[in-house]
Amino acid sequence: MATVEHYLEASERKNTRRSYDAALRHFEVEWGGHLPATPDGVARYLAENANDYAINTLKQRLAALAHWHHEHGFVDPTRSAHVRKVLKGIQTLHRAIEKQAKPLQLVVLAQIADWLDGALAAARTRADRGRELRCLRDRALVLLGFWRGFRGDELVHLHVENLRLVPAQGMTCFLPQSKGDRQNIGTTYKVPALSRWCPVTATAQWLEAAKLTQGPLFRRIDHWGHVAEGPLHANSLVPLLRRLFRSAGVADAQAYSSHSLRRGFANWANANGWDIKALMEYVGWRDVKSAMRYLDADDPFAQQRIERGLTEAPAAPVPRLPAPQSGD
View 1 (cartoon, rainbow, N blue to C red):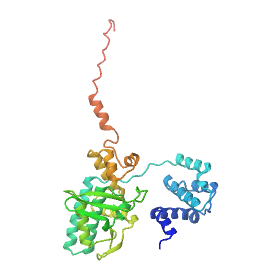
View 2: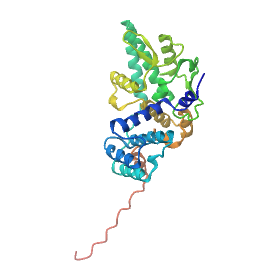
View 3: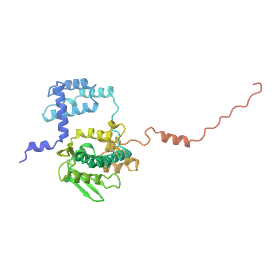
View 4: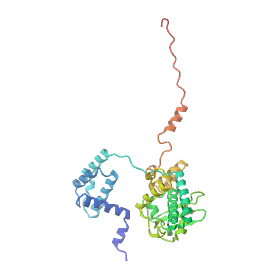
């Protein structure tokens, strides 16, 4: 029989619990702090770590400390004016440009898909079962991640039994929970079948080859072609993609991450005339601010817009010189 503790544990996301546990461990074990903490202790913790961690990391550490104090019935020291002033000072003196993953352009997606097709054919010729399965898995992962605009955590949480394939039309993917689903009611995503670089066909081919009928969709594969029972770990996704991109000859492969798939699709849709409302509904963004973080302007320096203005500007009048005076 389920207990109260069982449901309380289910109310918190696993990723959130893990990140909070890591933050508390850093505060107590690595830094040497004490719980419950005082405002002065938290302020010193922020100051001594300001040079080593991004402001968003420090804010996440504060959220973990706040959660622990609320959960154990102590006054939250992170809300004190002293701590807030220190955090504001760090933001002022340690400003940094936000790092964003390089968006995956369609031409690069095609390059990767074509390379995987060649690698797949070579693996079958050599009867290399492990290589064959990895090519099929990676092709499905990249195409599905791009055309559906999935985040890395959404890709690794997809389960076979939650997919519904409709031949020649598309596929639905049900995710019981995701980052944007605050009510934990689950979300169904529709994936179109396409004439080129089709995510539905790629997924069906991977399922058939790996003989998957339930459980995680994307899994580890060993050298001999044995498919693991558990899913790919979220932390392994970025190294996997970068290795794949390097093998496919993609320049600057280290600049890409799992977010490159989502940003790439968002930029492709924006360049092809999708309005922001349609894009938000398709990808699952709740607010415009979140969506705009993923979009790159077609004319980032406004060069084309200004040049058009220069072309259309009237010619400057030729100055009339005064008539020469006699004796000059």
